[in-house]
Length: 89
Image (cartoon, rainbow, N blue to C red; front, side, top):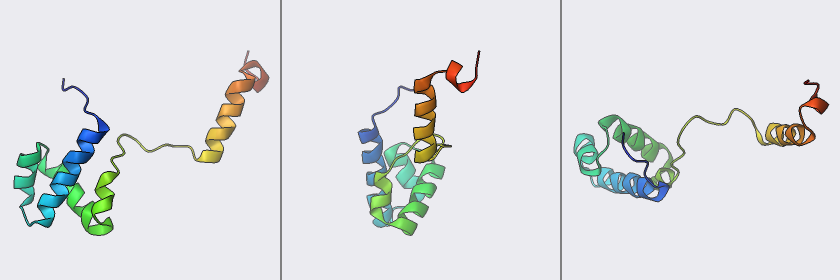
């Protein structure tokens, strides 16, 4: 299993890919040079075209949060008062 990489390393890789794409390097060549799948480069290219180079700085990974800020605050309050106060045995 591959070792997890630092967020800064991953960002550096995305930005390098973005520069190569802007220079006209073909997606498959960009993928080979930065060590990712062609599908990853395709997604980065679409994001680059839609939002500009700054969009590649944001490297959120994983599933998006299911709760908004208000719901998170409510959850924290409920956890702090405890299970019994929330009606659990």
